[in-house]
Image (cartoon, rainbow, N blue to C red; front, side, top):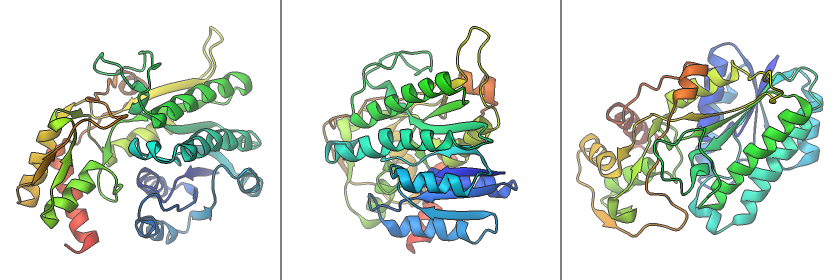
Amino acid sequence: MAVLVTGAAGFIGFHTATALLARGETVVGVDNLNDYYDPALKAARLKRLEGHKDFQFRRLDIADRDAVAALVADRPDIDRVIHLAAQAGVRYSLINPYEYIRSNVEGHVVLLEACRQLPRLGHFVYASSSSVYGANRKLPFSVKDRVDTPVSLYGATKKAMEEISYSYANIYGTPLTGLRFFTVYGPWGRPDMAAYIFTGKILAGEPIPVFNHGDMRRDFTFIDDIVAGVLAALDHPPAAGSNGAPPAAIYNLGNHRSELLTDFIATLERTIGRTADVELLPMQTGDVKETFADIEASQRDLGFAPKTAISEGIPRFVAWYRDYHGV
């Protein structure tokens, strides 16, 4: 049997595929290797995976119906799916909204439709986001909260994925689990995220952009904790409820710590050994002031237990950054 991992050359996808291979799984990875950020970083991640005998890679776009159907027909041994491919980024959705509909909504439906043909499909896990909470003010964010007020197109597409997944679980009985990720960072991270941007600019002596004049909080979650949560979710498919509820579940994967952005920057400064030149800017359109994950459900059902504080995670990221960039 095999696990299909979409977005396998991406940040979370790479680490997830690595962890699956380490525990003896066969992994089929797919990615379109687009240029949303430096494709060389994706290629470097992929190179580390392709050396493993139990890893097979297919370059394809998940919104390409024919390509996805061909993959599924060629690999009927796929019995679980971890769908992480998506067009990421809140700010980019203001520039290229169509790509978010194609990748996040259409791509999700294409994959669900194709995977219905798999004879042994036992569980379909997919990436959602803390962005679905939008303008919610109650903290911490709970999976029991309504999510009807998205403030970005990115968040709206992730909410759409959750609704579509529920309908597929209801119609076809396929176990589907959505995971709402909270500000993931760590080695091999995305260049459009704060840890990567700030580290590069501090090392280069350039000002770092700090929005809402620094009055922001984030539930920063280290990649190792996220991957542990993804695999735990994969291993615990939801069952249909006795009341007729479909086998569909949603979980938060966060650190359950809402950190001041200024504390995050201070930890980077101590780690790098330099003081940041801070450029204070107003809040960006589509952004939110604070995120904070209520992880009660994921702790209870998945045994999810994040361990990594920013005081440990940031030095590990900076060490990787220096090594990868030769700084």
